[in-house]
Length: 116
Length: 113
Image 1 (cartoon, rainbow over the protein chains, first blue to last red):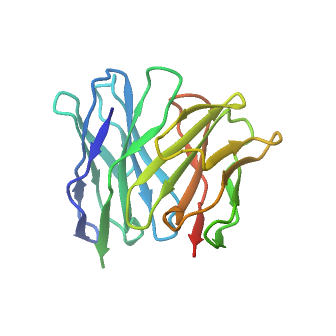
Image 2 (cartoon, chains in turn orange, purple):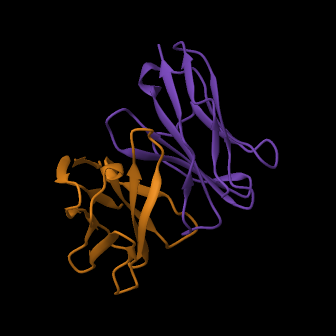
Image 3 (cartoon, helix red, strand yellow):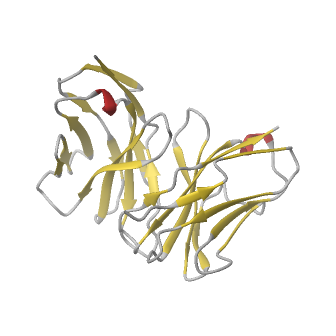
């Protein structure tokens, strides 16, 4: 079974600064995806970024980038030039690609507050 | 942009009653999921559905729960004899295929009193 651990319950960052959210996972699988989802106060789950485990290059999406360390099973999210709209809960998630099923396994989440 | 929709946005029910939560997945998606999130806790997988049958379910998804795709557009989650601990946000998601991005609906907040 897979586990996803987000050990920081909350973080705060000044607007325009950079913040890194940590995530570790445990799996015996070799073929998987990792995701970061954002959940603003509206509680809608929004995909922020995705990383395929077979890719060595770290994924980037505009101000969002990841540091994927496969050997260490670490998958952190870096948010550059933080904006007030980035205030939300962020969930790290794992998806096993072996077999026909593709459920997401989520971490407990981290509450990010961006200060003006 | 196509999106997953869910109705109702908020459902209040009494303990022991049955509820049906409805979802309309993105039209060309083939895989459907239900997740739940108890307030303040992480999002948990309930069930995945493909080709008109359950492909995987979690230990949470016991005989109290059932899913159905009654027509070509709706995907429902039925909870029989609701309990207080069923109070949660229920999210529907859909994807084109296994391993593809899952698009989430806005959720249904279920309150059992």
